[in-house]
Image 1 (spheres, rainbow, N blue to C red):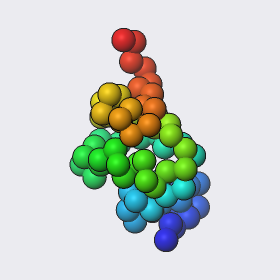
Image 2 (image 1 turned 120 degrees about the horizontal axis):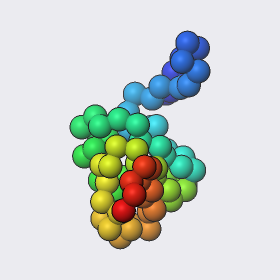
Image 3 (image 1 turned 120 degrees about the vertical axis):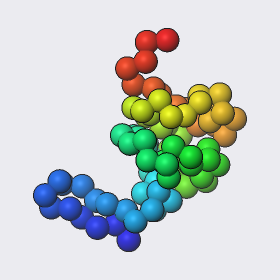
Image 4 (image 1 turned 90 degrees about the horizontal axis):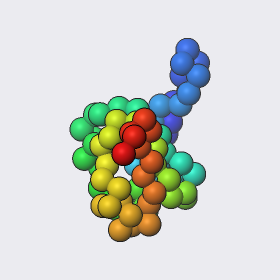
Length: 78
């Protein structure tokens, strides 16, 4: 179950699976191993939406496209 953090103004989830469950979009702000090594299948089965905004350049667009997921790398100019 997610815990609301009044100080930071968002909810914290104990696992990636719970954090992305039913999400319309996922925005990645960290390079933590749990996030970086997450398989595309996990996002494809847990998310309601199909878009992942990758601000850390962790994910291969080609690898995720195989699972009908759209990876948008913010700030990448190529």
